[in-house]
Amino acid sequence: MAASLTGEAATRAAGAASAEVSPLGDWPTRARAVSAVAARHATAVDNESRFPAEAIEAAKAERLLGLMVPKSLGGEGAGIADIADVCYQLAQGCASSAMTYAMHQIKVACILRHMRSNAVLEGLMRRLAREQLLLASSTTEGQGGGNVRSSEAAIEPQGNRISLERRATVISYGAYADGIVTTARRAADAAASDQVLVVFLKNDYTLSRLQGWDALGMRGTCSEGYTLRANASAEQILPEPYEIIHQQTMVPYAHLLWGSVWSGIAAAAATRAQAFLRNAARHANGQLPPGAPQFSKALSLLRTLRGMLSSSLRAYERNMDDPKAIAGLEFQSMITLTKVEASELAVSIVMHALRACGLSGYRRDGEFSVERHLRDVLSSPIMINNERILANLASSMLMTPLPAGLRD
Image 1 (tube, rainbow, N blue to C red):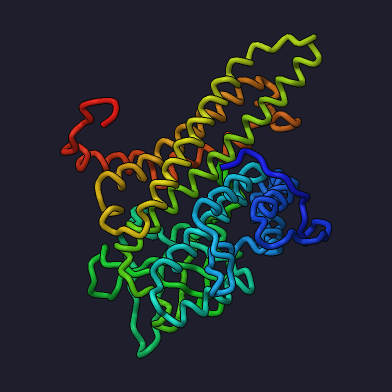
Image 2: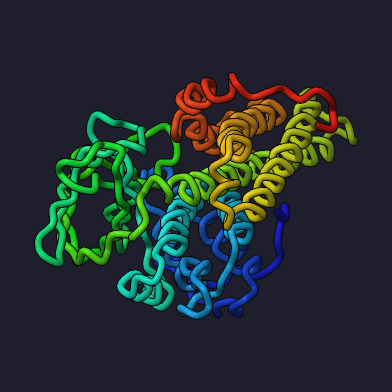
């Protein structure tokens, strides 16, 4: 993933000046354009804990929401590495904007990879590409908390239609989305783990607010709780069981795209530390302040993080069409630990950047502040809690032989 890209910010965003939209196909330039819009509004989004409307409108104007939809359905056929790079770029401007984009693309990937020949879902993907619809995710509810592989609410069949009522403790940017993709029990008599994934568009559902979102960081994701009441065509249920979708697409895309967002936040903090040190050196006849070694640590860890994500992306691209390989312990361990390690490395990088900047980084105001970056990145270890992940992984890994040599 490239550390920086070139191109002029170009969008028609709410509150932003109108400009010519970048040519289709030039994804890096378009991502840079949207990141510039996101950066201009990031402080207001954070201070007001509001949805990053300007950045998402810019993403729609640059047609980034349908980037992954195949050309045959009106999109551009981008791969996961392209989407990861967009997430990385957006996160350098505004973490909440980038996380919103990442969560949307995770849902798009689940639909595209598991809709088979479902004409209704194909039509939905055509419409998404054409109208640049924004999809939200609902996988957390009731007592299950963050256990995505357990659902309380069940699908209720009504002839060729279905209904669902779900108390979702979190639906990030739910009030601002054009549709919601949600897990549910297959039927009222199904086990909690016998789940399906369903796509509802805005006309299919109502939301009743259960709780607000006044969080430490990622404030613009507006991750409020709602009661979701929906009624739609039964064809809007993805044909494959959620167990398969979760293993083959949901988890890999989530961990890789989230990791790219956290990496972008870390890169932005490191960039500010670098700018602070250069500025300090100019005013002190080339003498660096005491925090300079901390920047070296931040830069080294950032290289490690980017290298790990690139390696994991390549591994997934090699195996994404091989269900047996994806289900294997080696791949599942790798993709799970990618999330854990990416989140912990990102926090470390931002902390080193803060120490490099000293008080200028600790302050909320000023061009070298990294306090927002730190608050945002602190969400990373608790988005699907690292402790839960490691506990689930530990029992299976106990039976895995350790490498006998360095090249094993």
